[in-house]
Image 1 (cartoon, rainbow, N blue to C red):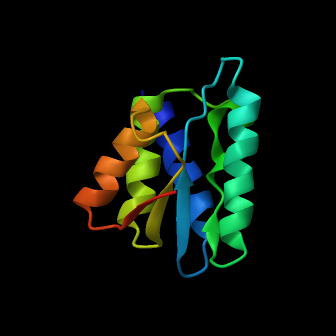
Image 2 (image 1 turned 90 degrees about the vertical axis):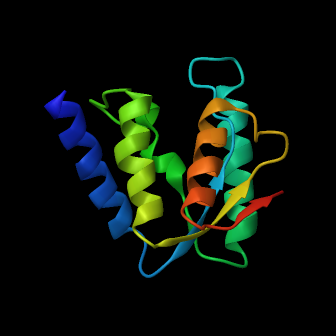
Image 3 (image 1 turned 135 degrees about the horizontal axis):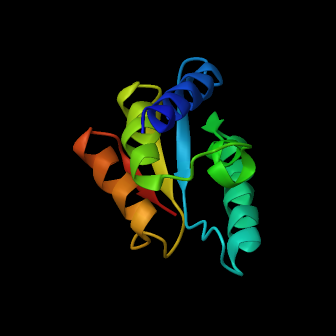
Length: 124
């Protein structure tokens, strides 16, 4: 369990290092292990690119466990350490939500926490 905590703390430190002052974040369904995974990631990256034309966007896709060697794949702990840490850092200024994804478990959790912390949530 300590290994998982250390892994996600190190990942958070790395992620925060990629954000100079502030950035927005885009949330959407991922579906790791499903036939929609590649399509979902492509869609997410497309929105990140579009929004990135106007604002600095934190690209969370590079921090997905599925793309990281030795990742623990423990979503609950990752959310508690990594995603809460991102939002609590003050560097994430807005959460954009992909169309029709607000009821996806992970996205709904991110929306709820962002709102609780006073981060604006914009539905695309």
